[in-house]
Image 1 (tube, rainbow, N blue to C red):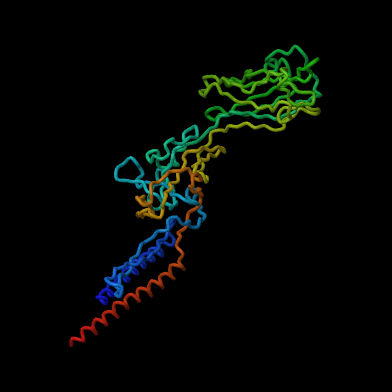
Image 2 (cartoon, rainbow, N blue to C red; image 1 turned 180 degrees about the vertical axis):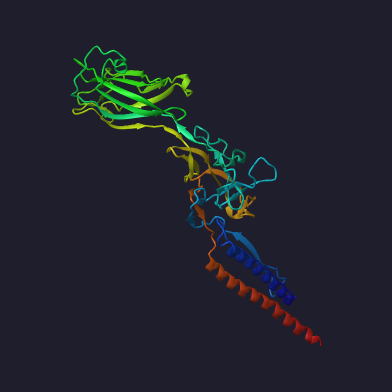
Length: 442
């Protein structure tokens, strides 16, 4: 009985080492597979209970394939901006079909980030799986129910025809000469615009409307302070509202300064507002009115308008907005934001790529195409924003290399080969012993 059991124990050893060799062969074959996680053979004994304390019943060995899914592979650079790698825990969410509403497809999870646009602009990896993401709305928000797979959609980077950004803020830093002779009393609103009065200082700036067309807005300055309030300037803001070549007054304001040349917003002498409204003519076919926030500086500070000795001059200006620009490229930041860039220097957030995490990723089941699916042992996935809640960060223009170490695999191959040969010797030796037993009868 023991000899037969020894043979069966040897057979179990052959089977276990054969499976180990299979794992090694898969690992070596996938040494250059992006995002591949190597599999290790973990051996455990099979015990047959002995009838008495003076007998021994061989059991054998069994093997358990263990995937090291949670091991980080080396992140390597790529020339493709839509290639991605995950540094840390988690997986990209992909779908087997381009249209997730069609039947027959399913969601999978992968670290293989070789995503490139297909013929319709949808990001698909080399295995043919489509990257899923949350669409970002015009206010910069993603869906509230982030745990719902149906809130995801294939990330598509085509169809972005262009982008225009209307001007919403104008920030000015300038000095209005303290030594400038005052025009004095008697100034009438609009006199600088209609040419009755010549301003002491004029500067014009380009602003952009809702379709990205450029218009000129002028700031006309005239020193009008006299008597007890000598440090006052009148500002007339103008623009051509209907493109007829004539400037229209948008706002007339009084800017007051302290005796040290800093801006005075609290004394009551100033009528400066923080916003101008531009009522573009309906014939221009653009959004009207357009509200623009003005920033002339802080009260009692010299961080905007000042009135020091010397010449009147513009120090700096910050006017946002941009002309219409064509789609140029896509950039993906480490938080998973897919950002479309345009040739006018503007950008727009279009998608956010989620990262799926599992309580026990090593128990995920392998699927074709270097992907995984959840199991009861792996636990249920959680969709997270990259870098939050334990989810890794996303690195664009990069891929994650296989975790296979070829030198280690060859070493394990030698050990497995020797172990297989040793197990075969158990069978041949037990066979010889049984043959000796049969010879006794002869």
